[in-house]
Image (cartoon, rainbow, N blue to C red; front, top):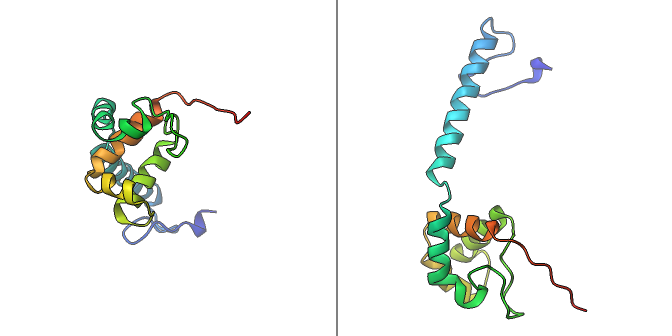
Length: 129
């Protein structure tokens, strides 16, 4: 199985004598890079709550459970889904004139904070009947 492993230029080659050390070094560098990039956008729930109050609550309510049928419930949604949706509104990949206007003013950190805040709210299931 190790014969098919390719970690990119500069990383271990399967037949190299120092396969173990180089692999560990490459894995360590990858872990550090991922950790730094994800901590740079680590979500802040309090900032998300503040931004939700300023921008989102009028339509989606503070708890993310909209009482208006045309506005989706955000509470309990997956944070990656919420963040992608906001980025798509901001970029124009997802079309909605109202949401595009709100999303345009959001920073990448605002988006992560809002996504984490609404994801942390308890989901409310509703039935039609």
